[in-house]
Image 1 (cartoon, rainbow, N blue to C red):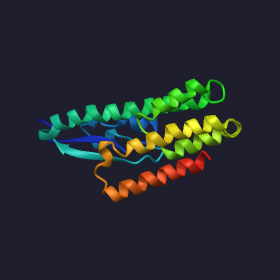
Image 2: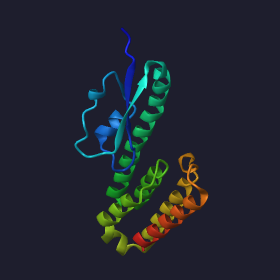
Image 3: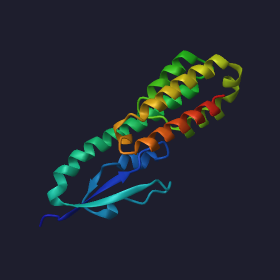
Length: 171
């Protein structure tokens, strides 16, 4: 007997998603209970679908796996960049800039400033360079396809507010 229903795990992929949920993102199972609840409270959904839709969901799974892997790469680059700030600023800026190709989250910039505030307070030029990298990346991200769904006034307002916040954080 062929199964009639399958289930796919959809995580809300962002800086807060735990590694376990990122690993499950896109996974397809025959039973809904194959996905244990997340102890970290991540946002996710388990979507049921029919056997007829299996090929579509398998194709979707490939893109979802890439998104999860890219988030893990972003975190690695960002964390390595933070670790190098104050020791090798050129390499740190390079890593932080590379991380922004995947995404940039303002709470992560706040975490950077909290971790390296003393270094940033002593080096105004470094702060200004980081601000330039982050403002450019934040502005660029609102041209990405996923933001095209937002009404233009909302997209512009979010971009402006984010840039204002970045300037405030790195002042």
